[in-house]
Length: 286
Image 1: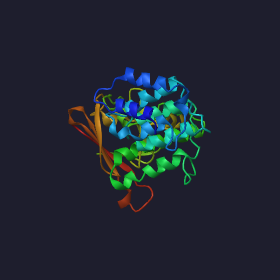
Image 2 (image 1 turned 45 degrees about the vertical axis):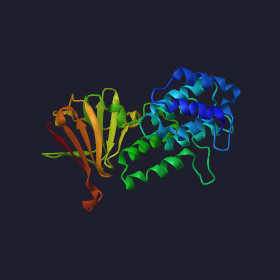
Image 3 (image 1 turned 30 degrees about the vertical axis):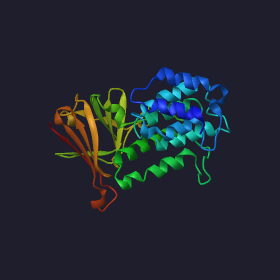
Image 4 (image 1 turned 90 degrees about the vertical axis):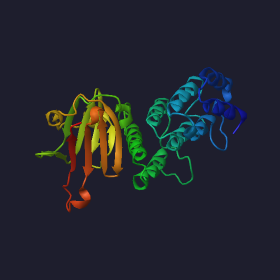
């Protein structure tokens, strides 16, 4: 990669980033901003080094600078955008991957362009490869890639891909409502569901399915006509802010709220012996 790449990378790697200096370097690229090198474009390669930056937010801000200064995601036979979408899969693994991907899609990035000889389905191949994190214990990252997958799938089917996020966007927000999507059975001490729950954090519908995956996905809510408000079953955590999510395994996760309240999700299908087992949700007083 050329000297300009190194200059921008060095600026982004600083403890305190001088964004005015970064902007000057991006502007100085001129028409070369879309040049294709063996490794990719300058922007797509800067994504690959994102694990050395302080936050994935840097990617979102950097992408906007490139787009505002002539970066064309359709250039080089649409490889510019396709490589950026792919390289996000090896970047920061935080919520800003989704914010950046949405920005690239808005600019016209093509999700179907193959970026490697082994690719058969564009960025979907890279995303699907990352699902292996469910087996290696990096559950939070795996869950983020579920959201990335749903975003790309929505774009491909002509649905609105905006606002699809992972649970990190809900952290710091209060739970305002709980809804049941599809069928459900109410127990005496827990709540079991066969389809999905919708946990509303303001205007964000966090959909939780029985695979213990968490994705803010307004599309699922818009398409579902069988939704029931069950907020009264979870009065102990309504109004409390979400502090974090901790996976204990690929099939068990714990949402932690302020004051110590917890929302525990367990998929116990492995011990069920039939196809109708549901995930159990337990509200715990803080």
